[in-house]
Amino acid sequence: MPLEIGNAQVREMDGHRQSARIVGAEMIFSQVFPGRPEHVRDVRHWVRDQLPPCPARDDVEVIASELAANAVVHTASGEPGGEVAAWLTWWPDQVRVVVGDGGAATAPVLVADAVGERQRGLALVAALALSWAHAGDRAGRWTWADVAWDGPPPLAPAAARPASASPPAATGLADEPARLAAILGRQCTCGFTEAADETLTDHFLAVFAPPDCRGSDGRVHEEGDRGRCLCGLTAPGPAALDDHFLSVFTPVSSIGRDGARHQPTRLRNGT
Image 1 (cartoon, rainbow, N blue to C red):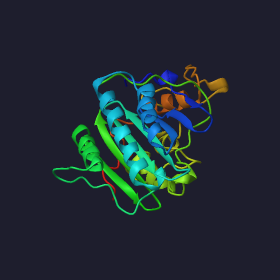
Image 2: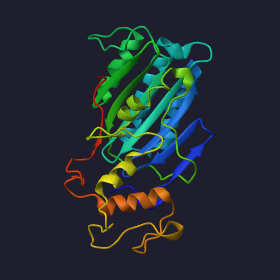
Image 3: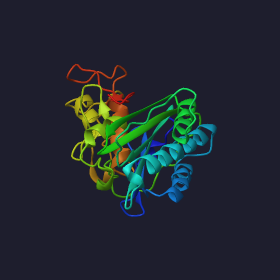
Image 4: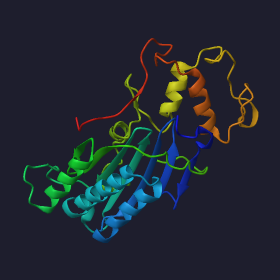
């Protein structure tokens, strides 16, 4: 994997309002912004700070700012006290940018021969993205887009508390963690959805790890003292140790001990 799993730890910056975590060969970043026009540029700068320079990052920046601007102008996020929540999910081959807003009576629609500012913005998103979609209603909504990644992985963050995948209550989306988990790729093909008390990594370890904890290399891999594996590896943090276990327990077929295939899913539309 291009990601250096040895640095796979968790960080939280600027209190609870910005965070990042690494799970396996992916990263999830999140940030909340005031729902004001002058803060749309902050969304673009935030993307630039999280991802390394490459042509794909330029596209992600543009898409994130367009979606944020749309949220501020056309949804409840632009009302007094409103907020816009943004997420980035990085995979080695793709980046998904998600913007959560306070909801609106109408959904974002791409029209042919767009003339309005909103339609032009969505046309630009559609032109740059592999695909884009939305979910939600007047109580709160997500809009997301996928961009093919052609650059190096982001820098692994420093250790801190785990990031929350839930948006602020002001967006009206805080009570729908399952849908957000699906959008961020935190579901398994078997139907499992990541929750606060069980992550996708926990789920994969439960279905892949054999009772004798013997990995694909024939050695026993089990957590010992001070973040060490019984095989001798010393991990810099719990997340890195989990990634080590995933690497030695996950079969090439992705078939678990229950006979089912287990892989992360990536929601492709708003249904």
